[in-house]
Figure 1 (cartoon, helix red, strand yellow):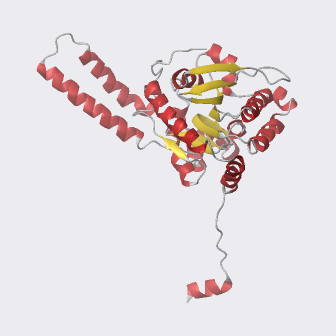
Figure 2 (cartoon, rainbow, N blue to C red):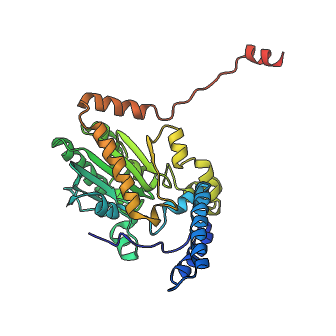
Figure 3 (cartoon, rainbow, N blue to C red):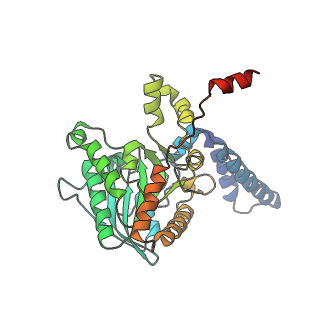
Length: 337
């Protein structure tokens, strides 16, 4: 199950070209065998400039830029985190009904001294892996597998960690025939009532019901350059503007970035990524994610079951609240006076 966790970026994103150009120059200078004092000064100055450039660019990404970072081929995926986070991992297969859906990986894991049940969506990088994992888009049996393992965790008193990274649930005919929407609805219902702590983290794409199917938890976190949305920007653009070329406009309107979600109270925590994005440093990103998971789990473990379920219920009932100010005729008269 191990894959290359030190995989370098495969391609520069459009807004990263200045960064990659400067990195290439720096690499050329570093390769000199006997650098002069002037070359050493140039290298130091270039490293300072590179750090400043990365910070300026990544602090001002547009929502559409963030989508590109979330989809980066070299961004760490679930299998990378399994390798980097856990001291032990034993995969559990199958949904006891149809087949083992490889878009969702489940298993018993150990995070330092915390034994837990792990659930995560895996996309794959090359064509072979993506076909094997169906691009991270699960069928009903994948969500059924996830729910059965979460219920097993509750039976044995284990907390649950869910890593979310999918463009959405698989929309094919077979998936619909086997009850895709129904199974996601069952997951939403039953996860809300599972009497064990659940921590969910969006590590890349959090697309629609495909993400929600394993997204009901007591603590919901998101990586800095991930997104969580009811629909993809391309899907939204196709519906509202009848063409995918308006995807950047849709991304701006959907308000699905980590900052937006924290402002709306949808997520509890934003996990900061390494400078330049998680795809530039898998190990540092895993270290930060591990710290977040450990803190969240230790906070939740030990909360009485009834209190845990009530807090989870209250958490999701607060989503979408707003205040509507009704303007009366008297108010209008006062305003015109």
